Image (cartoon, rainbow, N blue to C red; front, top):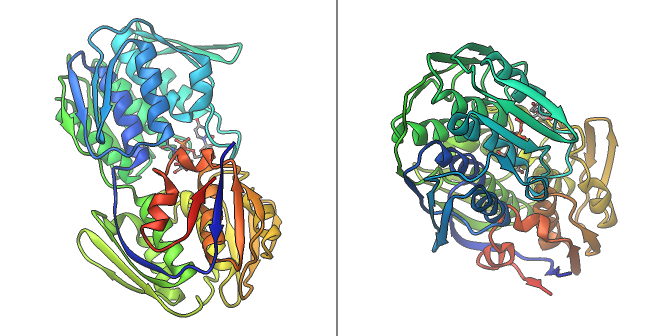
Length: 416
Ligand code: EPZ
């Protein structure tokens, strides 16, 4: 099993151009099932979540190509309506296929999906929404069986603005007779991106980014070529790395408005930020002042996917800070690993109290999930001495060769 070996004490310098957002590309890949015609998706990073999603598409009978960041997908005739359980276990976003397969074939079977170990991650909101649309849902032996023969547009109210449930329901409703409204919808930028992709296919969706999304069902959708939005979580991860290690970096092909809560916190800390229309430059040459309190919320609040990374910044800042994780119940796995590096953190339920220390010490740690793993890379780049990180495969799910990304900004990361 490979590991990452990281020499600490880096000061960062350089520029990184963002690729398309993992969490935009994954539902867009699923949405390509809504048409028999070819779809082309550009500027896609070569990461394992995308590779696994394409494996699932292959298993369903789609023609798949992926070269130089460009994905070609053609689902002219789907061979099956079920997602293989071994693949579904690999990837939470296999659940995104429920909607499109139902819309295309009228029935679907998806095993309970896998993904990061950051919480139970039930599917009750997906299932309740599908049932509102007249879809029958049976669950047995860890598989969800759906029948959409009586599907019709409906008014749906989500109990929680679930990203995946919003996306699944948008996709299944796009080919359903009548009008569907999704209230209390998720507002993440990736939702608007999915709306724009389905509209590029001839869909009639409006309101994404707001509380209520309206979908007018259409008879047929055609192929489309599309470049998804840049990855706001990769952007945030790199900005936090520079704020933690010090230095000056620029993130280009970026949409600063997608990470305003982070930019606000970094401004209050001790970073000098220059955010333009499609790039952000961050300069930080002194120890960060602590971010007093941080609560993760659905968009446009502070993103849970940047919580672990911010915890690392807070662990070496002046003063004491508090993090409340409101989205996932166990997204503090990284705390145990940071304490091996000398961090001073106490956790009670969904609250972590972080007392900043002057610096961390290199240690042998292990990644337990995607964003926690990326956060350990930041901690190791800052720490004194050498750090090894086991299970970097978690990080490879969402970052394309993280050692190349970080070394391009002046770090010293080796995969051994
Ligand atoms: C998406 O996951 C993202 N994944 C996650 O990113 C992200 O953290 C999350 O949205 C929140 O922003 C993709 O887009 C592939 P949710 P998703 O449904 O759709 C509960 C990363 O690191 N819930 O909004 O699974 C759920 O348990 C990943 O890139 C239900 O209770 O998130 C969680 O506590 C990690 N019932 C909360 O809602 C449901 O039916 C948010 O889940 C669905 C969700």
